[in-house]
Image (tube, rainbow, N blue to C red):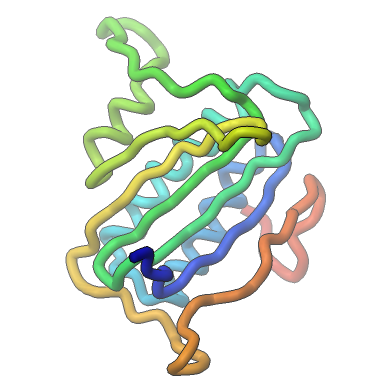
Length: 170
């Protein structure tokens, strides 16, 4: 039996150098709204920044393809974050030498997340989803609009390069 998450929200972003900053702002706002503990929010922002940066810089695919970001609370003590892009190439952890200037991102993800992984999109779809989960030190407390239906049903929305309506720049 599959259970519905307590809360979920999704966004679409362009592959653009400013996207990681915009994603961090959206995560911070949503974590505040869901009352996710501050320590977990900081860790989630660091890991999410790494995954979105990878999707912007390393994902092979058409430039006009968007990056999907989804936040879920499968339970009040678990935060799951997913980043989807158009590349079918799954990420590979590297073992960088001490003097290498890159290659440590997935090491950070593995060290900080409770669990993480990457899954190819299903048959007939392009791309992949890289995800991580964090066990929360205390339960989140998302607002419930209707006691019979606690899931956030807001549809995913795309944020174009130059658009972040009524919000301060990152």
